Image (tube, rainbow, N blue to C red):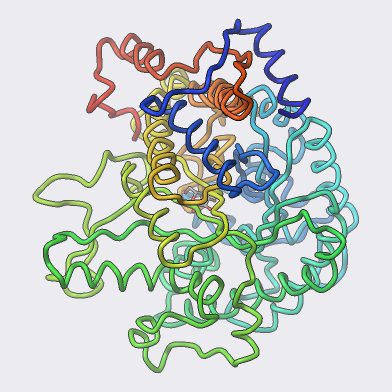
Length: 536
Ligand code: GAL
């Protein structure tokens, strides 16, 4: 165990009281017990190498920073989109003021025992066209230094959707500038051990260049394919800059991309057409980017057939540069949907089977709670691409529509249950199917600007009071849950690897305790299948 982990435990012990952590028995089915077994196995199998499991929480620049026109920052597509009223009449102008409040937020992460923090760099903050903006670069140097000073490792995303408004993903001319931008940041932040080039190209291409609901708001039948094509080239460019200029001197650092997909399940698993549609849909959503990067270097065959003459074509040289351009599989996972082959293509998605919802509703229309989708997705990735490691770079759930009452939002036991259920599925996939998960990053540290939904949907482990100009933060129950889970699992993993019991703060680690608390809070509502209205 590292010195910092010991310190965390010592402080937690002072605050919460301690007990001896023991290596759980194989039939311990608590979340904590399963996670301990899963991480211990990843250690024993060499999946983790000499690293500890990543326990992180995430944000993205435009969603939290604010300070949109401070420090030499130039406009992004999202500034323009939001200023035109297209994000539910909200903007990221102030957001949650992370730009000024990050030292306070880092203390909060520390208090919650997170080992890693995923943040994104705002390209328009650090570059004005091809010119460097030193003040912007210094901001990320300071943020990184503050994290490291507090023993929190940064996981840094280069592009989380706030494209400088002089660029357009449909135009290949942004590939070179993206490489230059990546170069500047790799050089500026030598202590960062994990880099993500692009966050969810499926989302920013489909929603931004087909459906027009995200910036830049383009509605088109085919532009999203051009966007994806250039996104893959830009990613490969950044990776090749990394490889040629930095990798040799920083052998410990990993660079990759992060992809999203909802699991596409056959509506009727006994209908071969539904099964075939599910497989094709996984190709069109995840395979679109994963197959070039982790597989052949090219698009899946089914994608080429589906889009026929509209499918973009890579040169052999491009394929060679894209193939293998990620050191790990970055996955953002939230939910699952059914696909129904009896419906015309385009109307084939449904969240109902025999009148039953696929999972509980949340504040986000697209997000149903489907824990089994998580393990299914993890196993799928292992079976299809067999990456050396998978880092879950986002997972979380929204509320804030059914209730805006602070007390209700802070007592988010439904979110605690969401995390317990999803983490259980992740641990089982690691234990039973050898899925090499090396990290888990919860979305999000803070309630924040949820893109076109503005501030209506809250994903935070921490509540932000948007009505108070000081934007005060209050840790939610879900934040406290991680605060106890992480050191407890860490100490148990330690006990398993050394054969010695180790000391750990125990309060709040027990799953049952959270269930009892919730029942009390909710006046007897049931943990399993209770009325989770408030989660919407
Ligand atoms: C992801 C995105 C995040 C966040 C989250 C919740 O797609 O990367 O920025 O908004 O969804 O919707």
